Length: 120
View 1 (cartoon, one colour):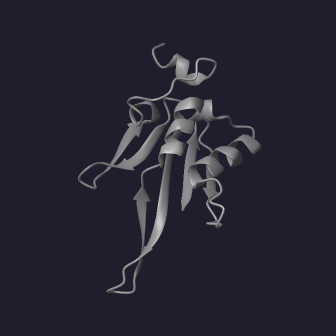
View 2: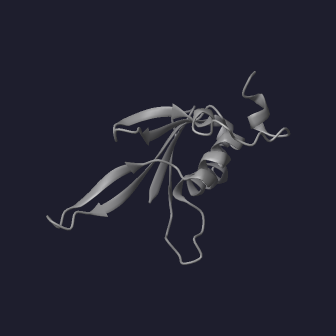
């Protein structure tokens, strides 16, 4: 999978999950690291989305499709910036946008982190 993030300043960062047997970080977490390495923290990320390549076995065509973040990534996005807009697929499979804070309705709230600021 690959992910891209757009910062407040208009910079775009890209991260990639290289699929190792030990799992490793997802593309969403990798892109947060790439942005941070370039001086842009999660609080300055506006939008993030992830995609995956899928082979259509019938046609042999490789398609690139939006994927929603896993639970771990949802929690990290919530902890780092609850107001990041995330490109996701809804229940009908339609691409839409949702704030990180809406992706975890019964989330753990990290009182020393940004999740404590959701109500502010």
